Length: 215
Image 1 (cartoon, rainbow, N blue to C red):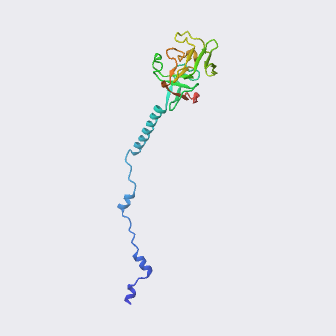
Image 2 (cartoon, rainbow, N blue to C red):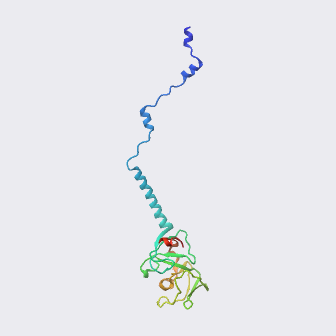
Image 3 (cartoon, rainbow, N blue to C red):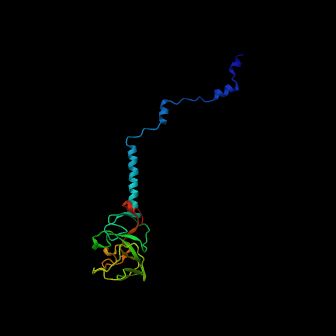
């Protein structure tokens, strides 16, 4: 009879052999909880993000594009004094008709400031100006120029008496859209401009809002 009490049923044996589940202690439970954030952690992360954005902007506007403000009236009415432009430089190669920004060393006699002009001809082309007709010819073909402010007239400036140019390779011939108030490649002190002086092409007008859009 005693032997029957010492024996366990198969179910009881399985239950007896199973490991006993222990409840986690309060100390163990506390270790799984997320540690409290340090004071100022959120601010530090925001500052990191802002600094990253600023660094990206510096790289963008120094290596790929830049913001430039129009200084003067030589590009009226296309671009007016004080307007803000977006200038693209990465991989840019000048083409006839482009509006470009030339760096401060281009025309030292203008006060060492960047200037905005339109590319009229590129290297290897010829430029002729007929002041009587108010026309510009590139390789003997008259340009259709709906962008100019008014009819061009002959200037009494002693540096602007030439009417024929052969543009060297690697250079561009530039003029302002306000032909009667623009110092450009017609001036012997400037002439055709080396492409190395080009900062980039004006691709977008940013300010004022009324002019916002591609150029």
